[in-house]
Length: 161
Image (tube, rainbow, N blue to C red; front, side, top):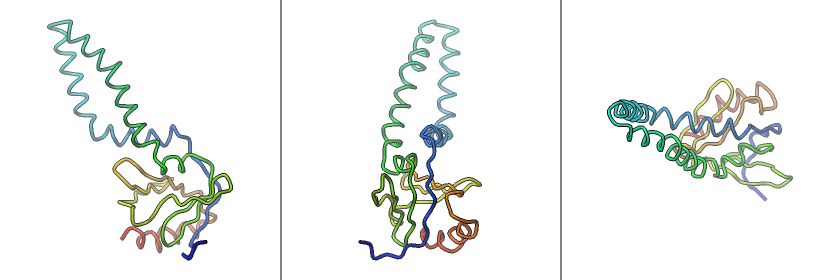
């Protein structure tokens, strides 16, 4: 089976897919929102002089924006990290990465060597493997507060160094 040392196991958990995708969307918008707002303002101002720019604005709203949302969903929310973030599972955190037990089967989902960065907030750890692809690990999934602090203080710095 596996020769690596199991450090932590978690309780079963899941997050809604809408919550997972909203985090991706929020991160993408913080990067591109100023350009989109500038484009909207320019099109609204141009519509005052020629109504054809209003048609372009409507095309942008009803064609381009849904295509962008589809692109984001297809490229980032359908990755294995996303799938295993939103299904009911329990985790096994070991020295080489994170495995999950989903549908009574053992799946290797994340290797520490592929992690680019880990962001923390008061609810979860966001383990990024790309710009917008991440694995969601909630703080309340750990079996105890001591285990959570042990993971965060003693082992997390080793994994991301």
